[in-house]
Image (tube, rainbow, N blue to C red):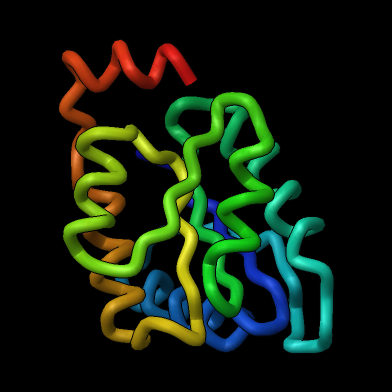
Length: 141
């Protein structure tokens, strides 16, 4: 079983809380790394916090939510062993796992619906890495 971590900034807080409620209903364990309100915060703090947790084990995955998904993705990708993918469609989500073996999904709360956020996360968690020629490329990162 994977350890799933979630974090956001203030712009992503409401969507983060919605995602958490969905996981609780499904009885899926999720570790919330903050913030605990929608008060203004600096997204890099939360992206770094989550990335450090995910990087500790290949079984860990993360969900980062901010207004666009971009800031979280840029910050998370500064960490070794992290491949954060900003997902904005079902296809981008599948390919992030199949070809890039992404271990963090970043979502833009101002750009996607709640329904799509859950669809993308479920797809991200279920899609397997294809390996093969893609592993060779990942090794070059």
